[in-house]
Length: 80
Length: 80
Image 1 (cartoon, rainbow over the protein chains, first blue to last red):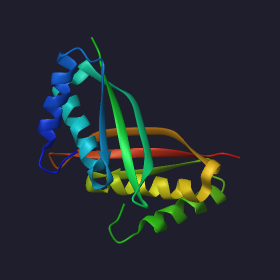
Image 2 (cartoon, rainbow over the protein chains, first blue to last red):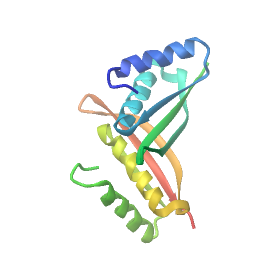
Image 3 (cartoon, chains in turn purple, green):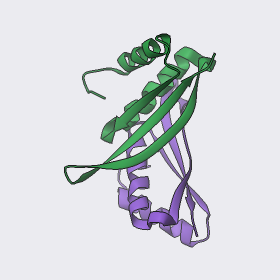
Image 4 (cartoon, rainbow over the protein chains, first blue to last red):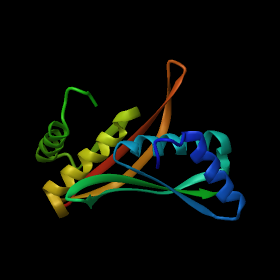
């Protein structure tokens, strides 16, 4: 996630990917942007309603230049 | 979650709850503190290692005075 891109930008990305035929889209946020990833999911959910569902939510941490950085991976599935 | 309390404070809370006999502890974060909730889980995990596992991770949003606030609920289980 990039600070210059809004929640709506990511929501549109996900909708485009679904329209291209992808069945699942992973929303990943790291560090302070974990909250933003959850906001993206909630916004996508309010747009598509029953059309999307959570496949899985994974949390953990990665070592990056000796610092531990938390992440979240929200796997969203299209429902037809 | 409160801004005046550190990640370590919450980690100690969870350890105390487990020692009191609770089998599961839910770490809840809302809004910008979602990232902090994930940090708490990662710190707890690095302390207790195989002694804890994720039972479930739930994300969603609540309406609070007409604003939609995202949340995360990380349900952590003690493993014996």
